[in-house]
Amino acid sequence: MPVNFARNASLRKPSMTFAVAFVAAALLLPTRYALAEQAAAPALTVSLTAPAQREWPETVPASGWLKPWQEAIVASETSGLRITEVLVDVGSVVAKGQTLARLSQESTLADLRKQEAAVVTAQASLAKAKANADRARQLRSSGALSDEKITEYFADEQTATASLASEEAALDSEKIKLAQTTIIAADDGLITSRSADLGAVVSTGTELFRMVRQQRVEWQAEVSARYLPRISEGLSVAINGGDGQSIQGKVRLVGPSVSTDTSRAIVYVALPSDVRPRTGLYVTGSIELQTTPALTVPETAIVFRDGISYIFTAGEDNRVRRVRVETGRRSNGEVEIVSGMDPSAKVVTSGGAFLSDNDLVKIAETN
Image (cartoon, rainbow, N blue to C red; front, side, top):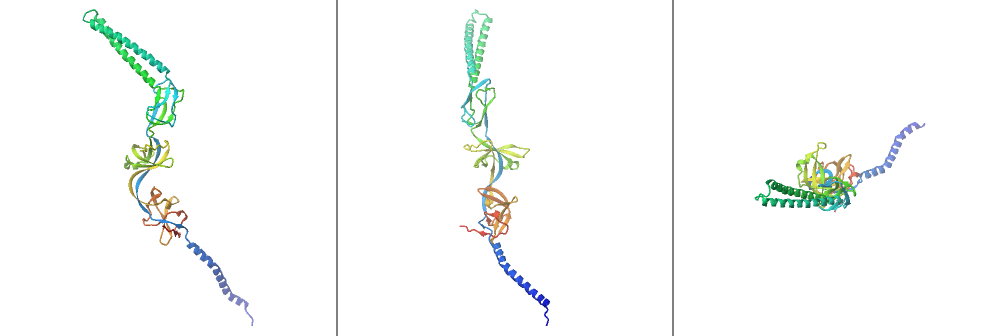
């Protein structure tokens, strides 16, 4: 009996196809199990913390220049004299009345001696005029002297008295000029500028030195005009010093005007007397207004992505959820969460930059 090989071949095809599929499935099964186990493995071991309720002062951000509280300009009060000595330099700490420089005194001393001689001459003339006037008074009733001569003697006495007063005033002026040849400090302070050069001839009003009075430095902070109604004298201020250290100050004065270009005002902040930062630095800081509640988390819990702040919270299933939040004040390594976070949430304290939404994590045990 003939055998139909074509028919038998068609009968064998389904069974062979099933066998191949079975073998392929058997080979892929371990791989699928491995992928499933890999997907179920924790992405990271994290620590959790609960948001903390703090009492923080509400602050106003500010920035501005460190400038002298007051500057004193030491200038020449005379002219035509040469600088013979310069006794201080930039950075010198000086006391009120201390000698800073000296001017030549030769011509001034000569004028002084000349004027002293003029005073002696005027005194002699007055003595002579006074003697004549006294004699005229004695002889007035006798008629030995005419009325015209008596009047002349009295006038000479008055003229000599006035002349002596004038010469004495001129002598005082020369003494003042002599004193002005010694340039002294107007107050205690720190020399910040020196224009006095040895041998230079000064003019009246020539600036020789510039100094910070009493070494007092203040912060001239610029703040937005919308905060002005809430800022008053005496408020505490935290300043980020140029050397990285924080400086505590007090509001001394709130500027009376607002810039029409920037809509900002100047707040003058007094620094402690023992703090003397370099003037001319541009620094930032904050003015403390009042104490208000703040819901805070560690700064390390904040994740920035595309300019947006996020935190990761963990649920009972050990999977994390990415939550968008709005941040506020910062202090001592903590940041205020203004909105977006459940106060009862468990927040991932660090490592959020390596996490994605719905990642499985391992929770670290806390002691």
